[in-house]
Length: 431
Image (cartoon, rainbow, N blue to C red; front, side):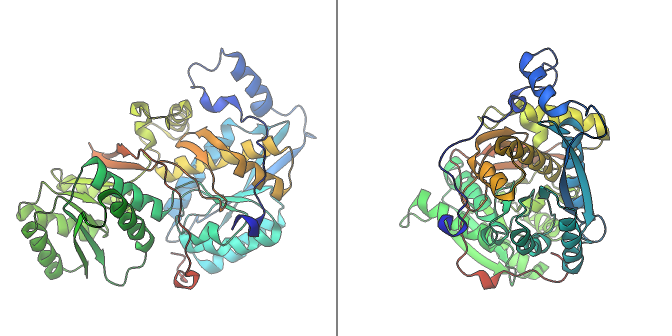
């Protein structure tokens, strides 16, 4: 893959800007901060100063508008803080995918005509898959903040990803269940005809086998069900019979409400339930107010708890993000992981532009690939040859109505490539 895309270069370029390791309340009096402010934040001296454009392609209307707005908030916040790079003012230009594949095609064509040096987006897996071929043709680098489909980056030489993939999330959940909890009684419950968790389950199964060994299998139960009460009750009965300690289950808020109600009635409050990234959504968190005794753990980057993070992934930029986000949007508007990842996507691009000293797409891509632990709000960034981030996986639980960090994997997870590319295609809804 590295040879095919020819993106990797052999030497590291300039060191990334020091601002990403400095906290907001101690920066103003620091000489390093003053130097960075002069480079990145100085207001243009005149209307004739040079500028660069970063495109933003997000759903502003339609099914995924809420997620799109979250990502736009993160991007606009980053731009308000870091709006000048090496003397170039950074302008944002936004286009609307309308949460559909057809809308995405129209939007990306219009955006490319505006000649941005780079692009951020999009929320929605199918929209991001649709964008890839246009990026390659135009040779414009892009970063999707939160779309997890492995084909998004695997099938495009110019596309990068700020979040971890589904397979990486699966490996993180497996490490937590089989290594951190030490469980050898794990159940895996998936929904029939639902391919959305295929990569996650593959990563989960592979990592569990490496931890427990093939002869000492930790997964004692694997079932596919339809999300109806009869089948939920049957599988929960089997979970109780086999004394399952940890259960992965891939259903949404409404179905999990029913599932957890039944689990409580059957005395399964001691089971730890693992889920998908979607469990960090507001609808799921609100539903969990009815099930406070149920322990849930899911892949989610909770920037709100970074101050309590004692791992190497903690950065002062996380604190800066929280403070500036509250100042801009209000203390009651809690940032989502998508907003934080979009914020970081912007930081990654301006650092790559700074290091490349070029507006050429190939040069910016090579600069992104050269990052070796670049510190941003959500953690450290190093990319593999396909543009996927190689990093530890953060798992969260829910306490007092918000996602909080439960566990950060001890090992970094690398994204897996998919060999059968025909099995994952975008649908017309933009899902």
